Image (cartoon, rainbow, N blue to C red):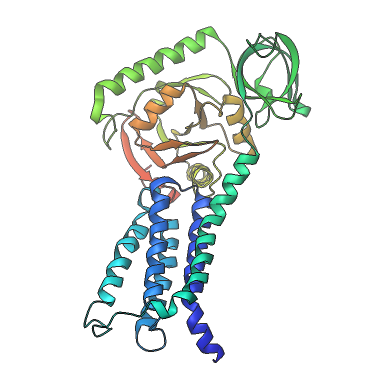
Length: 415
């Protein structure tokens, strides 16, 4: 048998195996899971059906050419899904999942390419067993590795604590805190805590804080979600969150704000821990979006923040005044003011007219609903959509773009 003939025999399996591995790698990289993940897996299985169906006819009729065509269409659809907005990414896979079985049925109906004879499965079944086993292993390999990793590294337990800051060591990233008793776990005492990802310049001795305490290695403790406690400001923010909750419930099915409607009112904390009301932006145009600092997908929050920065620079270069940029975290439990300050300073963001906001989780959820941003929380990550909104001087929504594919020029034309 010539090398070309051997390549013809094995190319369908190589295409199918490569497609399955590509599907699993892409799903792992983008965090895709649930029904969408299984839909794409079904697409890979449908591709395999077509490849198996034309296997016998590879050297004898146009079935081989059709096989190559579908083998190329499937990865192309996967690439198309990677650049589509999040809400549309399953459409190419859905089309293939529906189209490939239909093609297979048509291909082997009587008088459609096979002249009524059934394709002989039995003679080639023993040759198919090994590739099928390889494909099954490839489909399970990446998810299996992820499950094993998570089994080896369970999330450490977290404990809610309150206490008073008695010392700040910014060069070591450490707070010295006299914390209150943690019932059933630890008595009241003074301890050092690492505070990764936070700007320690936001903390002062004598301030009361609330946080989540996490023990990593034995005797090594860190704090996450550190929040400075202030009865007055906390009361103002809580009252605003309650008012937003009532408005959300009253609007019901009309909670989503259309273009031309007023943006929802809010009062949150900025990156310096100051209370910021939406009324502060009255008389100024606002470009607003939602991000979270731990987002690992380059085409999502990092790309959205980069475009906000580019738009800010372009607006300043053109002398556009009365313009504010606002990013609200969709992960307020982790993204405290100090974390947001570190996020902004680490990217060199000009904070003169760029504000990062956080606050009570119920207020953030209501804002996400009002602005039509979908969020599905996971372990240390959120699967979410993106929206960038332009609000006018009177608080009305002028323009909206979903996803991160917008350009600064699109907004500049409307400013």
